[in-house]
Length: 609
Image (cartoon, rainbow, N blue to C red; front, side, top):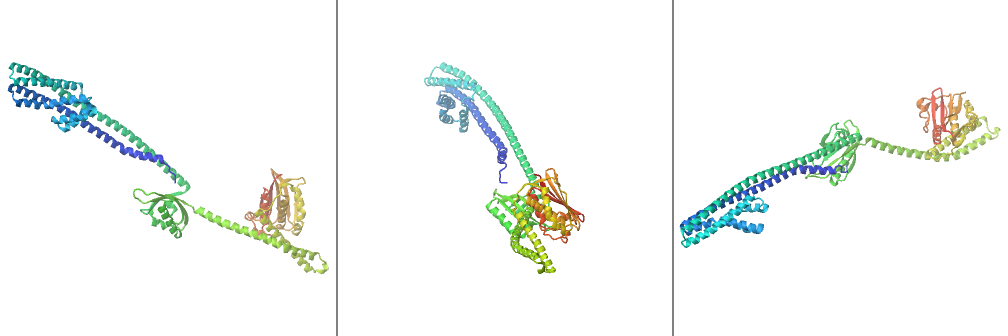
């Protein structure tokens, strides 16, 4: 949860939003800029076209004024001629300045054109077009017509000066007629140039309009296509991002379902807790996703955990560290479950307060196992202390018990005349009880040593058959006491096992003693040995009282005696447990098969040497 799983995809997702929103705006801005530029270019072309029309009209007015002056010789007509020539002269001077100085002469050109009577807006548009394109926007026909018009107007001005000189000196009318004829020729040429310029600028206007519209359409189409491709790419990236989120959500749902995890989210501002179906079931609130108030959720928490849980959540909301909270909930049926919540605080966004997200798991079984482990550990410590106490007690009891047995034996060995028959029987009772108590002490000591791991085994190659034969004389007293016939079916040939001879002797004597004690009068006890694979097998069986199958399963537990044998013979319940521990420490095994009223067979398996 604390990792950042999709950093690159998140940036891609944000970039897709920028693309989706920004590209249409970019297209609008570019198209708008192109439209504004087209309008300005068209306005400039219109201004040039209007300027040409105004200049042609001024040409006509100037020629008419000059013709009237030739007939009237009045200063008023001459003044009209000069006034009409202002605009053509400014146009010619403008072109001369631009040819001579280029863009550096634009300030003088602008002043000259405005002084000649042109509208400032038209002047600005015309000069802007010149700044952008120079004279490249003019056709060769236009530039040639302008040059010819300037030459014609220069000739007209020269003829006007001649006419003025003649008019002032009362010249011959034939001279004036000759000048008027030349002026008429010039007028025709100026009219032709004006018509040619008008046609040229009209064509330029139409061409400009077509080019601009075509350019805008092409650029708009290119931008629109590019925008469509980028938007499509952004949508594909967004679809991939959405799919990745969906796949991640499905993987999380599968993982949480397999792990038994539930999801929750707390909106601290609204005080609402959202639980998915698993989390709701953990709280005993049904099997569907649910949203409920924090107060409603506290109602299902065990009272002892409510305040602690609330304080822990508030601490997380305040400081923002990851949290792990364990609390108990009570279901409607009274069942109490232990839940563990793990999560983290989400940072505040857009003015909202922080919230919590996290996962829940039911740790009831874990908590119970921990509790059982603590109880088991405590029980083991108690048992260990008990064994230590029994070991110390056994050591302390052996000294006085040996003294009692010693003096009892001395009394039994004394002069027969010194003790009566009743006293002798009493001394024998002392010896019997003392020997039983000594056997119990020895068993307790062996138990303590076995469980403490203090018994050291010296494994060696031992002839099991010879060891069994050596043990049989030690069982004569038990055999005679219980009137048992002991059958030795071991072979004369040696049978070797990897064992501790002393401990194996203890095992055999213990099992044969039980076969005698838990037998019936005049019963039989049998011992067999054989080799099975890589194991040496020792079978010790009897035809005595036997036991139930469920009792046989509990034989090898410490201090455990079956009910059917408790009244038949005395015992501590430690012998078979010690036998099992010793056999297993020698890498062997021991088992029992018994039937009530039929008999019992113990089988010991040891590794072959």
